Image (cartoon, rainbow, N blue to C red; front, side, top):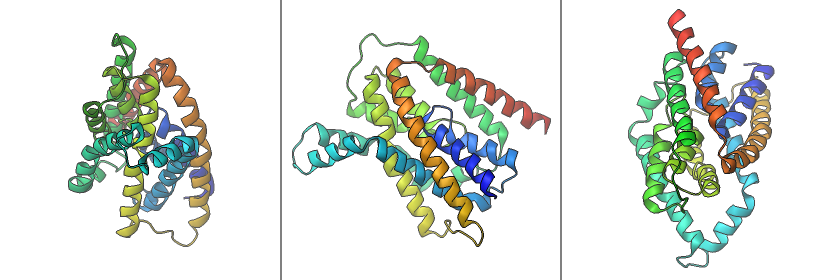
Length: 263
């Protein structure tokens, strides 16, 4: 992988991690178009995911500090409850990560048919938020957290947007839009950090000679684009404007399916 390819894939990862269009699906499409070997790019994938985690921390640093301060008061306050809800939301993806890791990784082989089909599902979910609107918005509860967590666990499939699935699910449950955006972006920190640590521990992460510069370039590109996308997405969710993302996912998903059938 060259520096140019790394920058392109880094930008794709940074933008699509937060925009509801599936980062994993776009990375798979990008790898196919750029001719990047999927297995050899594992180290790069870990690096760009780490970059998006860092961009999330930068965007929400005030919220994170507030949550940490609330926890160390050792009271059942709003901050402690929020962390508890985050913990509940991580249960489904934790189960998938522990018991179905190999099965999930089997889908990340550049299969455009799978990516296309999951992008169509993402388009459907985003469309529902436009046409199915609960009468009253309410705070996120513990049951809501579990349901949103299940949506996140399903989104391990390439092409099924994590942010799109969790935000759409929260909105369809009738949760407050601002709360849903904040919850969706903060709930992903621990799973991504955990997945990266597992890859490092089992030896999947290693930068071969000559790959250092592309990985660094991809990391920087993913961080900058991720920061911009995260900030922008928060504003879009508050306004409830997700229809054009649904249209985009439907178009890209259709192209991926047709391309798969032709090839």
